[in-house]
Image (cartoon, rainbow, N blue to C red):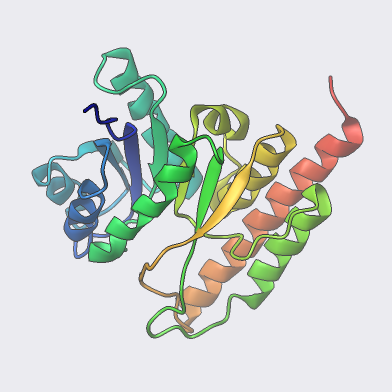
Length: 244
């Protein structure tokens, strides 16, 4: 009897000061069938995140200063391309983006891989349950993202800002270069749909650190709003200008 081997997957984890959580997150994603490489992009951490990730056997890319989520994700893709060139990773390997703070629950993102491997979707996006200790406060940014995506594509996502995503090679090609900063998920969604590719949201039992209500959290939300608005604005402009 023959058995089919699991699809090859490269995991990319952008991380900033996640020393307390990165080891468990790496261990969690390693339980996913088919994971051939785990790439951690240390985006200017000062707490030893890079050293812990290296001890866990991850491929580590270090930024000497914080460049933001989108640039960290692009750096991770650069390392994935290098692994493909050296034969360490299949050419058709999917790329699974995972937040660094999921800890042991990270194993649940494996649910995103199967639809991509079967050709049922080019991009899968995790939808998360109510988060422990959730303080709310994301309504404005989520509404901006959801309404903007629906305006541009006709599709209304449940969780437009979810960072846990699995991409086929075709989806990676359509979505890159990523929109800047916190606009990366919204830009990715619009670009993949504009390319005629398929997106599927998949429920995943994940828990991560929630954004609080202090002034730093409010600054973070303001930055999210700015970057999402910019990503949508750039894509509206492209529509008006047309091809060429």
